[in-house]
Length: 631
Image 1 (cartoon, helix red, strand yellow):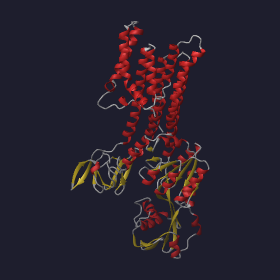
Image 2 (image 1 turned 180 degrees about the horizontal axis):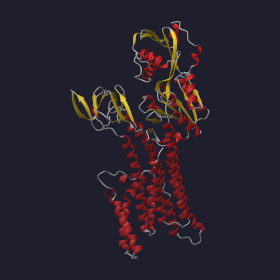
Image 3 (image 1 turned 90 degrees about the vertical axis):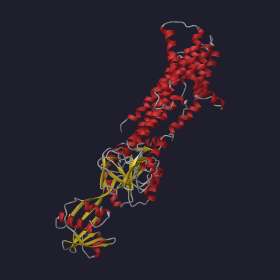
């Protein structure tokens, strides 16, 4: 990355720019005054006065650059933009082009200041976007509420969150019910209702009533703190494009010095009326326009913008390199539960032999309300409030189901093994049903069944359709039964699906795709997905509030669990890539044109410096556009 003079790169909140940049501003004012005397008023100032004010303006603007050039030269590094600017401007003074020499240094410093300011603002916007941790928290101690720093709250203590306040620490909700805005963590502003015992995270905003939370992690270990660390680390990881441009600059600058020298020397042997002053001037123009700063600053600024845009949409890229990597993805592999499905069971079908499905459901709910199994909960919660039956004499038969008395009738609710145990006959074709099936017997006669299945996420089908429309190959890997996996894949329209997989089987399938030359992104949310997330070219953790192992391993963290964010992440990667390469081509194209014009004597130092600063500003403005894109 291009190094800068940072005398002006960190403005304080207390001082406006005209204070922090007073030397540069003074130099600019002197330069404008000299140009007005010379060109607007046609006043020839005495040589001594002219030289004095030009040197004063030059030193006001150029001392930091000259000092940096000298320090680098002492270390043996003369091929850098500081040395380049120093040579070019001192050369202009040597041939009597005072104002042009001052202008080169002043406008170079102005451009450099704009670049530094833009980079600093990009970093600040990323940090302010996410660093929403409260400075104080209300904690209950000895029955009294106290305001303390969140860092001083211990695990197990109870904190109070008022309506409109941010939750300061991760914990379990004690209050019966509360609604939270999770936009800071997930990018989604819709309210998320939590109930007693549910986990809430630092950064959520309490929307309605005063809520109490039992703290489950320290301030430093909260999910939000870890997310902040990931984003801060991300800005330090260079993309392949950045690394290439940095290496390119180290080769590019000495080549430019060599070419500038050739512009000065070669015409001596081939031009009849050779003028040293004229060709020296052309070589100076060549040096000024060749400064690579616009390239090597606008590129990281582009990646900062991409990381900021992603963060604003609830997506965390752990480095600019992953913004690059995701643009090459041609195969998206996804886990089923928690990624494409809700991980929440729901009733799919109710069948009653006698046709009275409502009564069958009531009997099943009366029995299943005594079980904590997810399938039992799905049945119990289906159309709640419509059943009034009460189960008695409940017996759990491990691995089979439940037996109970309801309304004086013997009721069996469970799997086929339960009915087999009691020698109850039921249709053989039930084995063909894909989803989880709960059989019900009343008075030892088969009465019907209820099927239960994991609910597909609302946007999953549209996301798969959009992925395939973009030419992405879609695969689902799951530990669930193959029949269930195939049915979900059929409903969603996936290209391929595999079920009954262990974690090592998922790794094997992804490795096969990589061996076939595919660029694979894998999205998963569970701890068992961590190995395959690590293997894929781009590992995506679904649900930034999920399994720590997967989040730590992933290259990209989607802070909610909506599949469409995978497409958003790919789109952000492509937006960033396009703008970065627009800057590369813009900078190189204009520089090559002006280099040729300068060597041919058409462009002056004025055109050179305006072109250089202009390219830098255009590249910066183009990079800043990323932060205002919608995805």
